[in-house]
Image (tube, rainbow, N blue to C red; front, side, top):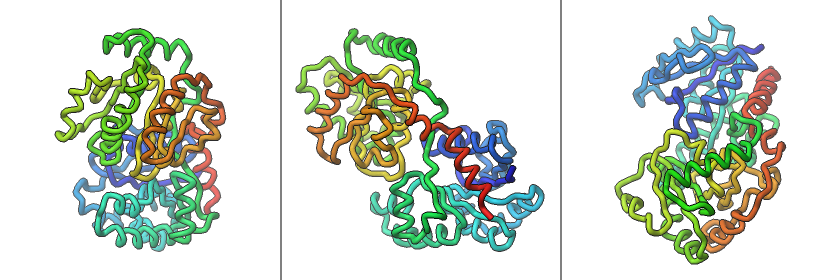
Length: 373
């Protein structure tokens, strides 16, 4: 098996947010396919990983430009016979390229987004500088793991990364079959009892970190645009919003109870909400990358309603009619499809899990790594 070094420049152990889970679980499953080592920041807990972790990188922002870590990583590479290295995100890509030329290792950049485009959408003036840097990193790397097919196409067209030097390595889930009817019924009854709701109440779910701009905008879309339309349908329903980090500007969210909104805040076990809800709603218009909660919701066999932007990376053709899409900002269509989604009882197919199960994703990545010469 190949000896592989994963370079992770931020906290993932323990994983809490979608992006953290994306790296932590990818590494966990990849470590079953290769001999994996990880070089990362001091804040990460090595005891939480089933592979050796060198948490020697400083926590300060200066870590991204500190050349003195080169010697430390070089020593780890030599002592463990490592090649290739996987750099998570392009920010530390310059270090990966240095190691490529001075240590003779292959370098894979694991992209989770088009980072420059993401910062462009939030109005950062320096996004173009990042764009040129990101382009340079991916061109100099030996291979690029892309999170979506759309990103892979972008790398080809904008960054001139050949298709044969890239592949889609998507975000995944840790289970390979939907929950049983009994599990979902038990979870639904729990939620009805938890919030004193009558049987027959349709439960819609939105989940995400609420101090993240695209998620915050999605909550505003729910409150100001979608719910006022849906409330006219005279259905027994509640929209449950889960997630921590509610900013002060939305403190009034807690006062929407009379308008069928439940703010649950941070919940200790989000799987109960995924299993117990009827429909997941994803009115996200920006942010880039793949929406991890949409993948998880479909994996829990929920019907899901999403904008086209919010569904990037999820092919509706492998969802068996469970993913309802609408144009961005077409909120009447969104509300109408929420109603239709409550009447759909198809199951998520095996094809979905073939694509999104972590074990399959890691096996694909390991095969690519083994083929790098």
